[in-house]
Length: 334
Image 1 (tube, helix red, strand yellow):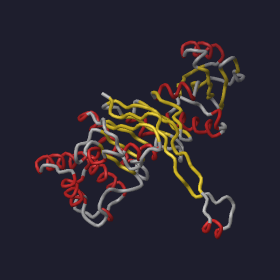
Image 2 (image 1 turned 120 degrees about the horizontal axis):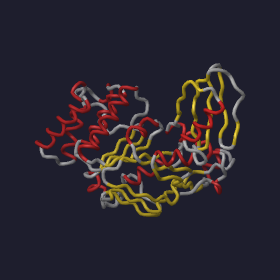
Image 3 (image 1 turned 90 degrees about the vertical axis):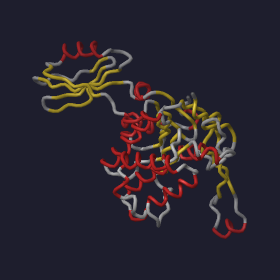
């Protein structure tokens, strides 16, 4: 079943355009320009999917999330979440989705976390028995008991993020939108949040759309990646597919018995060397791993070898770098 439908989504903003004029001229006769944050984005997400939504800063990720959450109205196009139109059916949508913005909090700043949850129980009109059962589950999985009676302003960043995630899931939503949920967290806090998200997906079939700059979030949580660049969707596929598209080679590090001349052939090249070791790169479309190993064994006195598959972080970094060097008319399209 499809939980999220985005078809030809576009969102533009009217922004002040200084145009090199003086501050007085801008104040007396302000001029405006139209900024296109999202341009014709289309995708669907099925129930239970965990999808990463990636892109450089300013690409349109948060704008898309805000349109899905009903915070912003699309300029054009269609957006539906759980069969609802977000901007028109916000009240019904609020019962179906949870939203976490890593740079903002949904907690009441000066009251204990537990008091915020009690207020949310009334907002969502949750029966007391259901609320208590849900709260107990969140205590166990997020470790809320240690700080639930502490005002939000006194929480550490890791504690606040756990409390925000608990607030987003208190009413048992079927869809969760996460916008940079692990930003600024230490290693242990990040792992705690990832474990909880993964467990909730497995036990409740929670659908997750995640924006992040931490590629460990993607590697550990998501089976599908969407990439947006300058407001346009440029990739929709699996981590393996994005690797094949943007990094078409594999590197092999060889431990060698003695130095030999560098190898350079059609689709195979030596890219690094140090005493007793060298790294060779080969094009996957031209050679299989057994084939290239046979070629390397004929040239190098190999003692040992290690295949270095590219990480998602390296792949996405290369993709961002490649996109930044292309003019808009030549940027890759879906």
